[in-house]
Image 1 (cartoon, each protein chain N blue to C red):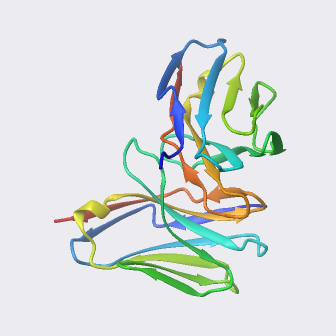
Image 2 (cartoon, chains in turn red, orange; image 1 turned 120 degrees about the vertical axis):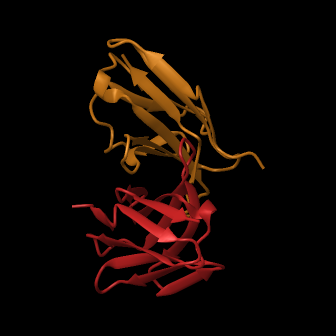
Length: 110
Length: 113
């Protein structure tokens, strides 16, 4: 079935350190994998995405890697800042719908 | 330009009542999606519109839920005989035809007492 697993559920890092969040998906037909950042009481914001024809994509301090063989993808945030604190969701596109992971609460301690 | 907007931002109702939630997508976005987000969880897909038609309604939990998009722009999610378990944040998203990128609205927080 359509499933996305996300780990860890919570992550605390010191300001300036890196943070890594990992997701696995079940359907090899999925070809689009976005990451959303959601602050408390706010809408999910698309921060980066990757399509299945590439293995890595970077945008300033954030990067996403994709391993299609293993069906997993990861979000990497370098030089974390307090404003990076939020809930992060990975997702995989199945047909036209996004199936989301359960989320990771990231806390950046200053 | 303006993003996806949703009204009301909060809705409190009593068990058994009928509610309507509205979504205004980004202008020109032909695809529209409804998701439901319970506390501490990721959004869960409800229904997808391409233009005026519901192309995929496989996520609607039961026949108390219905959505329309009569003119291919604004959409309304309708919930009949609300139950306490319907309490959640209802999110709307839209995207351009041919694009996978979905942009979310701020959501409507529904509380059923």
